[in-house]
Length: 637
Image 1 (cartoon, rainbow, N blue to C red):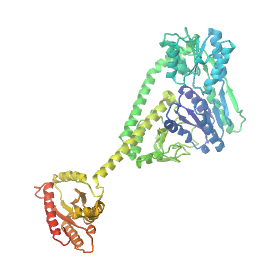
Image 2: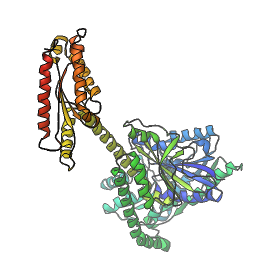
Image 3: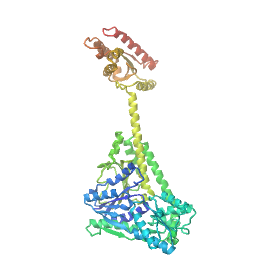
Image 4: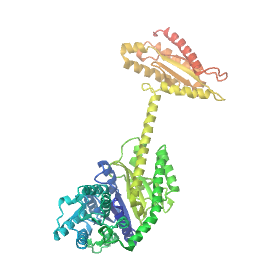
């Protein structure tokens, strides 16, 4: 039975994360353990709502269902989140391994950042006679960056070189900011002999800015990085950098957590060494191996571009499919069919889960959705395992992945949130597809899916509101019978039916409520409204199989069809008899009586020589005859 290990990380430094995950997956797989990677793309630059929604993914796993936790702490910007995960592990009585940062209550696996940064400075001074330096840092609270900064300062001091505060540039780990800072450094003529960078991406951005300002690397200035990522090796000039040995780091993380679970002794702190990698950016050349890597990268460029094009087309297809759905039921039917036919981008095992609160927000047209945490059960929008469609309708939060069992071959499940601002929509599960993390493809996929679902929800909300407005326009708000707008539409429908070969049978009944002005003037309009409602209700009760319309303040019309048409004469007699009894009831005050003049006319379906207006005119004339008759009664006006 496989162990279940939860892994928490940011997804931004893809070059490091991909290499680390590959070795971690292999280490866990060898010892029969599944890895569940919960990945966030939240940064300090995002809005509070976006950060909340994205980092909710860390609230998804139920730790009671896991055997251990690994946190890539040096990839996360939020120490409070890491501490919260540690507390949850302790409450669930499971071990936690923290990579890249020391944390109370956790086993720590560290990289010797100090010696790595120090070795770079020693090389630049002793091999290249560098006399002045600048350090392009990460964030001010970035522990890795600060350790490397301290190492740079201490090493330079040993050689009587001072690194001033103005020589330190905080890039926020943002490549564009690094470029701008380097550009500013050039324009101020503050370019030193050597620039040491917190990572390889920052180093490449700095080199581009130096080149743009006419500086040659390494001839005019030496530039170094840190991490030894693939893009830095094929870059020109190839970077002098520090190799963190991510393969060993991933293996160590997997082995330590499993050793702990097996009861083996493990030190609370373990520090792995780095090694200096020389390249062209300091003037040491790159070697035949890196030249081969460049040629390979050039050869593969077409395949990479083609894959990205396929990926973009897939995202557009998903968006178009979702936006074309008329309702949620159609979405749950159509999108899975589309993904089943084409899931090359997603892989052979892939799942989309929707939080039921999000579904409810669409079905009930409300913005009530979870902003913190997740539901205990999820709706399966799409699920495929080993190219076989899984038709489960729901999955429990404790299981997370449809069709998952601990007896399967060990796998890496990459879980990324989909959300609308702070509101949870669900999550997506990719399986063993580490390459989708590269180039931030998994982030783009999740964001595109989130945006499509957001627009779908808004479309549904707009359709609901339009439907409600249409219903409102078709109903008289006082009496709740159909409105004059509804009668206009019914007129068009009758015209179409009249023009068909078989024609149609109907009669129009006209009604005019008596005494309304007297009641309004003597008792007020509220009493008049109640009088109108009472009389219209009697019309509906008598002609209960007909559509009744309020076409004026005290005027009503009924279209008699079906049973009411068959009994039209007797129904009209019954209605007039009821009116006669009411107005002759001396005990009834005027505002409580039923006093309605009525008349009807039939459409001649045989001759078809009349229009609706003609039928309506005859019914109106019949109604006014009845009105004159009522006025001659005892209580009529």
